[in-house]
Length: 113
Length: 434
Image (cartoon, rainbow over all chains, first blue to last red; front, top):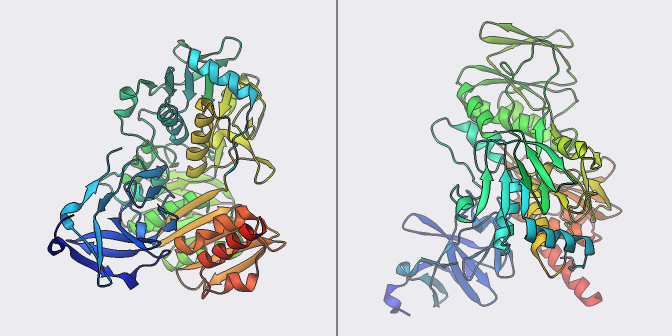
């Protein structure tokens, strides 16, 4: 993992809960910050199928269901798990420090199928 | 999720599909999802996809929504990218109609005379719009919304300042009305019933949509039948049964759809509204299946046959049936709770379950605002939930309905209790009992 200096803050730990993901911004792009148990994950906020915001969606275990068409993604891998979604979400490496949720902007990547 | 069960008839269809291939009639959402799923499951047999439209499978919901709002760009939701079909060895035949199903020969005859053999046949012919049967009404002066071509033609007509008459205040008619208003048209809606959406949602939701459209300047004519259309140059004058004369540059008709079940009926398969199939999508012929809008299917959740004209049903029924055709693990019944959505102005409606006229209605939140929910309960069990701009709070209702949870109406009406919390409690209690 990279040096902490490469990480930038998205939000505070208290901003996100299991039921309510947090919408953060990175250089004008909306990101979704998720909590699963004690761990935090960051994906793109925009669904890869349509104009749905995943932060407005329904968290079910380690999956996020888009509020638009009920397509699903695995929050940890970004991979689509239910139709109509076929393309994976971009995900970032996350670090939690001093109650701050941070990502390495350069770590954004899409899982290969 | 239901456990897979072994069904012997499906085994025969599975083997036949591998040997002689699968033919899918209808290249809409259902047909597209069926062939996509067959290949995703590793099915290696031949696949032929026959559609009468020129395009590969696409999703239709946007045709009455986003597509009508602009003229300079299109956001078409293809089921798969157009190159997918050839790349996956799917023999896709656009612009092609099937003339007959020959059950004895296990083949279909195309209108051009060609014959294609099948091991298993999936009928996904969908539905067609019901046409106005009215003096003066023609395809030249009445716009229907079913295909990409329909939507492209209509959106060119929605010019600011022009007058639009919408016949039918169902979801399609109201979405088109909202699009026309957004484009700057003056919109009137004529409806035979006493309020919008009368056949599908409780009166409170219909009243909400009436007020929403009225606030955008839409003029409603309820309890109003039609007498005839008069054509005056470029203007259509809609004469109502009560003698009103309503002029319009554009008339949009949304009075329902008719399942395309004739092919099946002509082949001797039982048809009642749609093609009668069981919970495995199987018709009376064990080698022939029907999915999507055309399938009058047995749904175990309701313990009866239902016909659903929805995006969700077209997609998920096709996926389930295609999986069953390829899975060696056994078959899973298609038993999904109906889900539906509509976008009008800045209001997104979502609905789980089927509304019933006699059920108790509970309101959560304030219908005077843009965000509220209506629950329907029967014997304290939820059967239907309709949310306006409340997708996340509404979503737990899906599970509460399928669980058959016994609920308190005061709690459901209390917006300080998150629906997710109610669902968690119900799941916990079940886990303890179970």
